[in-house]
Length: 588
View 1 (cartoon, one colour):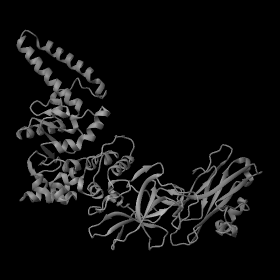
View 2 (cartoon, rainbow, N blue to C red):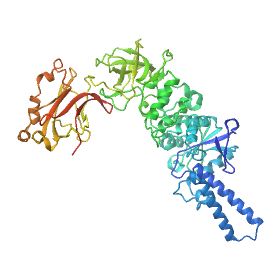
View 3 (spheres, rainbow, N blue to C red):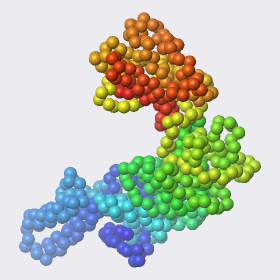
View 4 (spheres, rainbow, N blue to C red):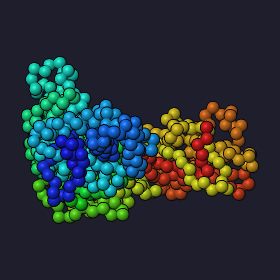
C-alpha cells in the first residue's frame, strides 16, 4: 500500500505487516487530478530545488546563469527517466511546482494533508495519486483491496467539491445544509463512493471551501434519505454483509460510473468478492460479479431484479444487466431457510434448484419462488418458461415479480438458465412480438436480394422489423423482393408472405412464384392482397403445414434458388419470428 506523508507530500510504500495508522480521502474526480507520476515529479522538483539552494549557499561564486543551466539539465534528465510512464505529448521538463499548484487536484491533496495533520495522523491515502495506473497489475490489486483499505482507515475525509454554504438559502441548521448537500452533490450518485461511505467507521464531511461540515454519525437520517441505505447499516459497517444481496444491489441502482465495467467492479467489496478486472468487457463485468456472488452464497434474492419494461414477449436469463434493475429491492429480504442444493455455472447455463408453482395466468409459464420476501412478508416468485421441453428455461415477463400471500410449498425442480438465452428454432409461443428479416446465406453464387415493399404499416426500414399486433389472432405480412441480377431479368420481382396464428402458435412462410410479372405489380393497387390470396390453405393449417417453415423461389432457368426460412429467435430481448432470406441486403 502506498501512502502520502502529510508533512512532505512524499510517497512511501508499505507491506501489509507494517502499514501505519492512516486517513483516507473520498471524493469525486475532476478534470485536473494529480496522478502518481505527477506527484513523484513534484517531489523530485522539490528535492532538486532544495539541492540547488544548498549548493548555491556553499558555492557563492557560481553564476546565476550556470545554476539555471544545471537546473534545466537535471530536469531534462529526470524527464527522460520518467518518460516511460509519461504522456509523450506532455512537456514535463518545463513544468514547475507552481504549475502544479494552480491545479485543483493539487490543492485537494494539500488541503487533505493539512486536515489529516490536524487530526494527529501522519499518513493519508488518495486514490488519484497513490495508485500507479500505468501498471495493470497494481491497478487490479488496488481495486480489489479498496474496500479493505477504507475499512481499515482511522478516518475517512469526504470532500464535497460541488457544495458550499452559499448553495443553500436556509442555513440556519446543520441538518438543512446536510439534507440539501447529500441530495444535490455528485458524491452520493457515483458508483465508487458507495463503498467509501459504507466501509469506514468514521467519516468527516467537508464543503467546497474545505469548511468542516460534520461527521457521518451526525447526519445518519439525511444520508439514509439520500442514499436509500438503512440507518443501522450506516452506523455499523459489519451489518452490510447481513443485508440481502438484492437490497445491497439497490443501493447502487441510481449510481453511475464513467466506465461501464466499473458499475460491477465498484461493488466488489460490498459482497466480499475478489475477481480479475477486464476493462473492455462492458456489461459482462456486472454479470461476472453476480456469478462470483453465487459461488459464495445461496441468497436467491439476487434473482429479485425487475427489467425496465414489463412485456410478456421479453425473454431473459436469471441475472440482471445492471444495478438499476434492483431499484425496487430496498425491502427485499432473504428467507432464513438454507438451501441444500448449490448453484453452479455450467456451459448450458446456471444450474439452480427452485420451487415451482402452477401459474394461474394460463400462459404456459410457471412460477418459481426465489426464497425471498418483501416488506409485507409475501414470498416472491419469478415467471419462467421451458424452452426445450426439458430442463432449459428462460425468465419471462421480467419486468415484474409475483408476490404470494399464503407461503405455499412448491415442487422442487432443477433447471438450467442461460444468461444469453438461446431459442430453439422450432420453439412456439403465442408471445411472438415481431417479424425480423435477415440474411440467410452469403454464397457468391446467390444474387443479391433486396426488399422494395412491405404490406405492414409497422415495417421499419432501419431494423428490418415489423410488429405483430398483440390483439390480432391471425397476422400476415407480404414483402416484395427483387433479385438484383441482370442475368435473370425476366423474374426480378416476387412476393413473400409470412404469417402467424396466435391461437395455434403456427407460423409459416411462402414465396408466391406465380406472380412473376412486374407489370402486374404496377397496375395492382393492392398487390399484397393478391399475394395473400395465393397462399395455399395447407400452409395455413398447423396439421398439414409441417413444412411451412421453409420455401424456395427458383430464379430464371432453375439453376439458382432463393431459400426463405422462418424460425423462432430473439430480437434484442423480445421473442420474435426470424425470416431468413438467401442473399438479402440492406440497399436503399
